[in-house]
Image (cartoon, rainbow, N blue to C red; front, top):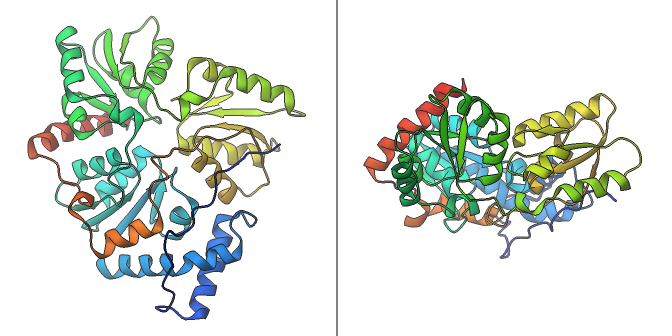
Length: 358
């Protein structure tokens, strides 16, 4: 009755193992399996198959001084095989900004790679999967924001970081799932416009009731929209003993009402680890599957994860082969380019996020 994970990604094409000795491949396979910590889903033979890819990617990173960052929702072979840093949107945006390397490869969805380019316009930013979008980012345009500003003149506009560079350029500040409440509380005035996530916006309306009026755009994350409060209640009945429900704030209000803890991906991971350490191993995790896979790999105690995680098809677009190809010979559409005017205005937006979040 535990958590059900998606299928393990297999290489699309035969992998050239001639670049490395059998001893190198075996050592890398054992490292991968030990890091991923899912021996049944990632048996040693699967790890041997991908070891030549991770070895070659890591060699090219060193040779070309590339900093490879990956969002938590990426697959374990990317997270534990080749990523230099893994986290949520806020932490990764700072990592891209502060990295000494002049080339950033962002294994994620498009808006995240655009964010890296905004904070580091002088760097080369590679995005292996240009087709990897986001239902939130794709659901709102810069024109939508301009219309809202005309309708509510002078009202500050906060956008969730899951938005394009063009949308960020029209907004006053970005927020992430780890800082949205803190930043929105600190914005001037008694009203604010929040785009594009209606679920996070509803959470803001409840949290800021009596302090601010929150005008919300009608967008949603297709992953977190699947979860319902009824599903949570059903699972509570099925699990013997106490079960702690951890939810991402992109979920609907009825889910968040059932949750014992609400937070960003990183906060959910840390809370799950803490619960295991204090003897509360029964956890229902309400977010994308990658978060659960990181908890399995990184928890020092055995946890019982319940429910059925939901996979983000966009986040799972990228495979090791895509990363390798982008490192060897990036196509024009894999190199992030943004118009200077949009970068300038979006930089102000993100600078406000960093200022208000600290």
